[in-house]
Image (cartoon, rainbow, N blue to C red):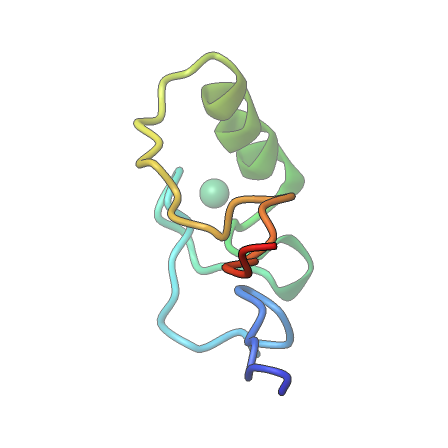
Length: 71
Ligand SMILES: [Zn+2]
């Protein structure tokens, strides 16, 4: 039975009132959630440099079959 898997940040429409987390300007559809490529790049660099505290994502562990059968 397939679960209802909603992808994060999928087809979510840009909502008015959103602001760029970098500079605070209104976001632009093409650069969500940022206002421009510049800000997107800045955010990316923060990521790469580890400035962001990344919480441990609790995703399904890959390659771990749920097999409880004893053979
Ligand atoms: Zn910005």
